Image 1 (cartoon, chains in turn red, orange):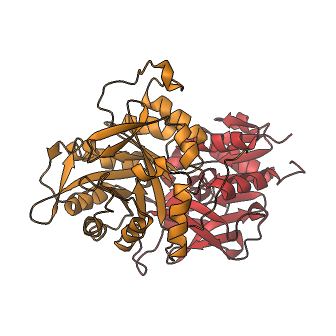
Image 2 (cartoon, each protein chain N blue to C red):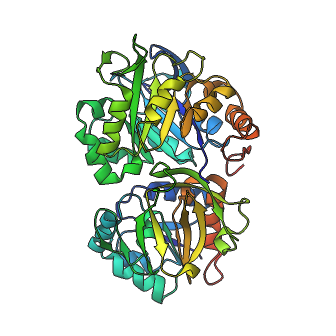
Image 3 (cartoon, helix red, strand yellow):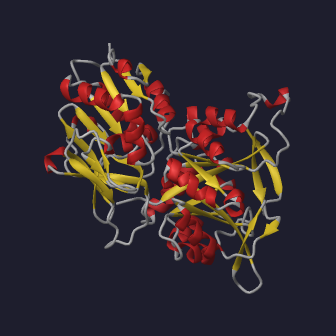
Amino acid sequence: MAHVALVNYGSGNYSSVAIALTRLGIPFGEARTPGDLEAATHIILPGVGAFGAAMRRLDEQGLSNAIREHARDKSKPFLGICVGMQVLADVGREHGEHPGLGLIPGSVEKIDTSASDLPLPHIGWNELEGPCDDPLLAGLGTPPTFYFVHSFAFRAADPAHVAAHCDYGTPVTAVVRSGAIWGVQFHPEKSQQDGLGLLANFMRQGDGNA
Amino acid sequence: MLKNRLIPVVLLKNGVVVQSKMFRRYQSLGNPVTIVERIGDWGSDELIYIDISRGEGYDLNRSDLNFDNHGTVLDILADVARHCIVPLTFGGGIRTVEDVRLRLAGGADKVTLNRQALDTPDIITDCAREFGAQAIVVSIDAKATEDGGWEVCTDGNRIATGRTPADWAREAQERGAGEILINSIDRDGAGRGYDLDLIAHVADAVSVPVIALGGAREWEHFGAGLDAGADAVAAANIFSHMENSVYKAKQYLYVNDYNVRTPSFIPQAGE
């Protein structure tokens, strides 16, 4: 029976994701310690705020290595949201340099608006570009449209790890994926039908879980 | 490409939804939670709730109101957040970093700071550092001055500050605000459209997104607001009355080639 470990590490949007999972009827439990990840079939790491602060809290709660173990080694489907996606990188460069979980090679850098002169943060609804053929995006709008709110973005070392991007004067990574590890820059829990659809699609990943 | 946003605003006074005119006359519109269901799922891009109570308390103790007697504004937030599937901004009466924490933990995605940011601007920086700039909206109320400019006012149009909106917006951005909400006191509830020059005055001064509020009544007003430089257009009174008004407003903007999400009439999840 599918069961999500929804990580609570003091990130602001834990309750929003919890509300979305409840709406979808997806069973989940609050995960605060490494032990809380054991029984789950899926892991969701939400997150808002700064990269460095998020990694510090994950380290303090002993979750950094536990997440690495479960996501990479045990191949439980893992979904990182916003900062929860950014910490998948090797390093984040918001307010200094901070090491990440290192699960998807790359770095997190400020969105480059030098040419476009667009406002930062990137706030609002934006459309995904590209083939959008990742299973997480199945059956969503044409194109899938989600709510973004961030100033920093994931720069993947290997373009094969970028499943989708959006345009904000420059390509901005929207979805990263490596094996059963996914990361989304936008907020599916706040993106109405496409967001709920993505979460439902995520639950379909893994060993035949529905 | 990033879309412009259409944002309904819900004003709360002592636990009920109200509409306002020049920040003075307040008429009750009812339940702060069911209004989400009327507005929220019909293609709104975000929702903004602003608590304009002045400390008279929330214990309404009236059985005729037919909804939960919310003890505090945080109870209302919890209820609203449960029903809200779009980004939610919750503001009004925020005085401390802890107030912000409680709202963000309680279901809000962003908060607005208004009076307190003017009184102690360090709170902007403290909150941005703690929660991220993207969660902090500085809300500015402006009144036209005789020389053709504007002045920032506070405490519900009771206190003038002597500052221009552009000047204060610039400082707010430097201190860490992620967005500016610019509200015209004169246009509030007047139905004559936004103060377009005010919008341009602020949009030209900052490089964070700008949300316009105050005066929209016709769909054309939203288009004009976007043309004037707003990244998002908001309205309090207009959406609370009319059925399907968010959808209709979006439809107008969409067919007139404004950069908005394709309007869709979305039934609430679970229906």
